[in-house]
Image (cartoon, rainbow, N blue to C red):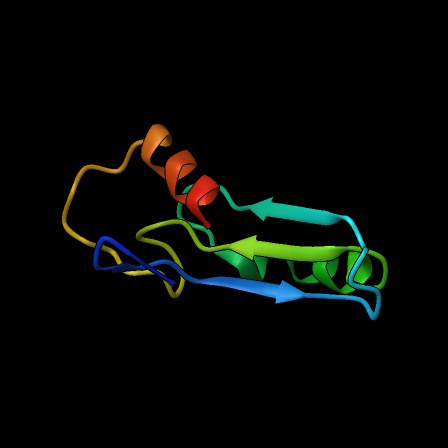
Length: 79
């Protein structure tokens, strides 16, 4: 997904039912969605799992700018 020219990556896993509740997984500093592989495998049977890669992490773009908690939260809410 592109936001203001910055690619923000995420990983999704879904069960068969489209009515399954969502579960959003957000990694810590210097991590990415792969840290949640066991949790994704476990919860994907019953939840719509979305594991984000914050700006500057994993497969998301890393523009040269200041990274703030507020900015990360805004990106997650936008997705």
